[in-house]
Image 1: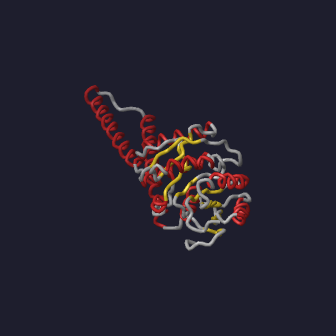
Image 2: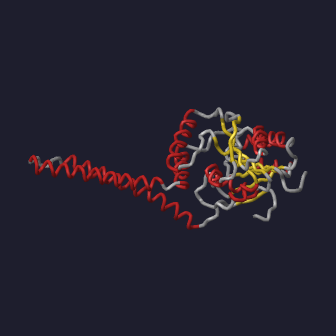
Image 3: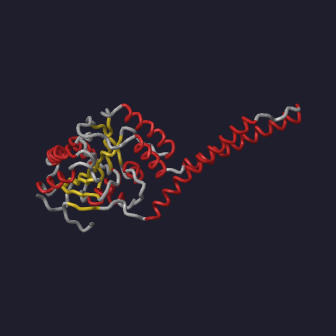
Length: 315
């Protein structure tokens, strides 16, 4: 097997799809070999509840180009990606999911497009083979994210991409706890594009993203890339104050000009509860940002490695 620096590294976080790994390996080897035999496949086991680590070890024993990283607990998909990128040595690095919805054969398209002078090429799922709910939630999140962050993102673009070693080196400098791969790559800049690729139906396992996790990911991504929710809460507060002032002026005019007294215990209580709810909501938004700041000040590692199938100076 080649021993020099790999030309292509493939990074894939692994969770809940152990049965897909042998097929993923075979298809990656078949796809990458015509490009170069000098490649590596980095599988990051994000504390998968199945026999994924045993399979990764078997693949690594069979082919030294397969490198396994086992995290000490479940740190989440994006931190697992970061672990893989921290160990990737290739001139080009492919990031993809392990469940074969990201079609390995499409790497050829991404690589060829990158050779046109791009540092980043994302795969755009022209026809997503996901459930209606997942596609709908993705579109809704994308619209909200664009509005709040000011970043122009595409709901059809996910993590499947190829990036140059230059991009990887700069990505490693970003050590925030609150992570999302695609927005981070977009923020870095460099010359990037996207191309249409095929997207497969899920053949193994099921998505680990529940509704709760999807909402948490959306909130974390927005907070990580925008302070617009804070500015909106301030603007809304001023707007409420303005209308309250107008209403108070109207009540005073009615009382002195027409002798109409202010009545309505119910309306007063409803107003109090309404304003109280707004205050608690604004405090909650502020609390989210303070909580993220608190997490960053701890400066804890992004992930902990339990063991690997290879030796590295980075360990």
